[in-house]
Image (cartoon, rainbow, N blue to C red):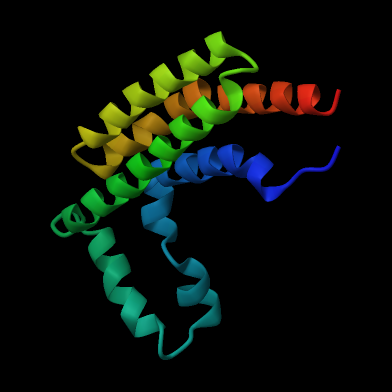
Length: 145
C-alpha cells in the first residue's frame, strides 16, 4: 500500500488545523526553536517582539484575525477534499464531516480570543479529524482492494 502526498493531504490539513486550534500552545511555544536553541542574532530580535505581543492581552488581538483566517482556510480545504475524495466512498459519513466542519468554521469565525479557539481543539479532533481519518482509511482500503 503506497501513499502519495496527495493521499495524505486531508489528514495533514486536519492535523495542522488541530495544532492551530491549540492556541495556548501556539502562543507559548511560538518560535521557541529559533529563540531558545538556535539564537540566530539576526532573527531573534525580529521574533522576540512578536512573541511578546502575541502573549500580551493588550496586543494579541492583532494576531487573532490572521490566526482565525488560517484556520478557516484550512477548514475550507478540508471540506473541499472530503467532498471530492470521500463522498463516493461513504456519502453519509462525508456529509456529516462536511456539516460538522462548516459548524466548526462558523465557531472559529465568531471566536473572540485565543482561549475560545483553544476550547474548539478537542471538538475539532472528535468531529472532523477522527472522522476524516476513518474516511481516509476506508478510501485507501477500497483503492487497494
